[in-house]
Amino acid sequence: GGIITQTPKFLIGQEGQKLTLKCQQNFNHDTMYWYRQDSGKGLRLIYYSITENDLQKGDLSEGYDASREKKSSFSLTVTSAQKNEMAVFLCASSPGTGQDTQYFGPGTRLLVL
Amino acid sequence: GNSVTQMQGQVTLSEEEFLFINCTYSTTGYPTLFWYVQYPGEGPQLLLKVTTANNKGSSRGFEATYDKGTTSFHLQKASVQESDSAVYYCVLGDAGSWQLIFGSGTQLTVMP
Image (tube, each protein chain N blue to C red):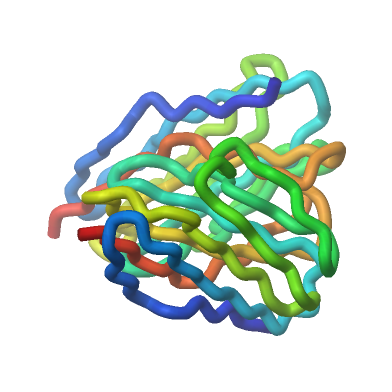
């Protein structure tokens, strides 16, 4: 088994601020993902990475940067927080392709004042 | 492109009632289909997974059958419990892509 750790659990930011979210996995999985979940809605893919130092844009990448410095970690940066923004950011990992199960972390809850 | 449709945004049942959550999909390939469940304050977790090799999956009393003719992957449970209250996502995966396609989710509330 393994675990995905996301830090911080809660993040309160100011409009225009750059905010960084971190994700660590000990599954030794190759592929990692960042999703955004808005209240009452499904998951939308922001970025994914199929190996260390690889980055692939998802449907929602505008306004975000990502970094995969090593196999076990994947960071997401909100480049300029939007006023009144409220969402949950979920990190996931999987052994490989879309046929494989993705394992999710508990999420980082963002509120922008 | 690939897509998943869940028409039921909310389902409310009493304990021991039968659950049916509708899911249809669209794809040109041979997908793997998943149901994920998300409890409050947690990330989604796998409930069950079905590939083209085995057209039915089950877990914890839940069942789903992969019907290529109607392109459906409905979730069923004979008798729900209050602890089943959660959001259920129908999800499509494709061997040719690293991405999963999530449906919009169905909030299940089970009253005691």
